[in-house]
Image (cartoon, rainbow, N blue to C red; front, top):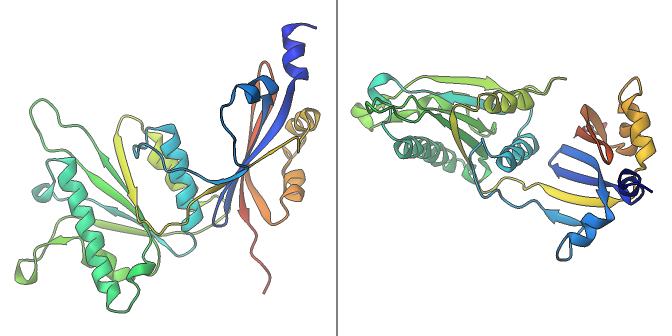
Length: 276
């Protein structure tokens, strides 16, 4: 038996499910017994996904965590807001920009507290920025805020300000879109847009009351040969996987071939709406 045959014979298929709210990602990939023996410690089969060490969207784990949180906590009718600055109010540092958006969120919470809804506020914020050049020119910074519909629409525009009373001034433009969960997910498109340009720096933060993603690992549920058959099926296995996960419908399937161990597949799903 050569090295390739030995690796194939000693491998098995692992299913890793991560879910948050109505959103789920299933990864099915080959795993060898040698890899299992090399893994240290006892692995729990169902765990809460740990928070990323970095909150920079150029970091792979941070991107994945952001995607799960956004898709799992926000949906139809929630808002995506873009806050920009006028030249006069453009912050010179990232820290100042963070303070601006933090103050904005606190103003929204203050207004919601009047109706007892402040604790229901959920949000995620991405701040995009470019490093200042050698001349020390101002950094063109802007923010993307995903926020739930507990916030009145008009209030979103009203609080992007500085000062109080007669001294209250708008500090830039506000653009608001409502999330629509069409066949091509609004949230997934937004996440894809934010990840597209790696030349810009991005920092993200979120409210502490977001539902956290969970993860479950199952081995030997799938056979290598079955995955190979699905790769070449006319629907890429959509019908099959919707039978395997009957409470969900498939949004996207992607396959990737490993020269040694065979195919791996990643499936994005969303929970079906219950009748009645």
